[in-house]
Image 1: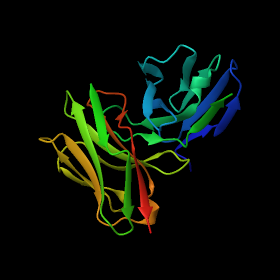
Image 2: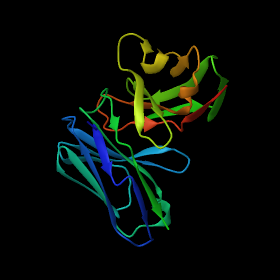
Image 3: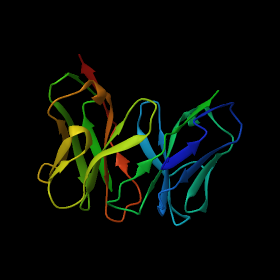
Length: 113
Length: 113
């Protein structure tokens, strides 16, 4: 059973389009995250949600809009895609903040042409 | 605020040799420290973590790390490298009430036969 799953795994699209990435966790965790990994493999937090409530929005352009319909799901919608949005996006979940391990999904590789 | 610095973006070792990956952290609060591994085209997997207590932490796949507060370090070691250890390794830090992991830039490990 996959703990944290993401769909799609690959996403190729043109500039200006709108796309969504879905994330689901079956671990019963309260906290979910979106991270962006750039071409140099640097990982940076984008959003954190706790019990469906937005906790962290790390200076992400407002073209990115996360949505958490319930504690097990955290989706990421991106409007007006730009070349610079090309990256791997990872969803993660944990029991809470602080010392708890974060479990990562397999990633979604987004390529904007 | 917390941050980590990983010294050495690439480490090349011979099979059977010691693996040493360096991580120094900066934190205004007691840190929780993590090492994650990322195999090609996969998500991140936790190797080990330090929260409180014993400063020598053992993880999966024969890895261990030592928390040294005086040196603000959390270096990762493995006595004998295996070909399967070739991957990207990330050190990360968070704090008690923090809802995000702050990652280092990563270290790519290659293992020579």
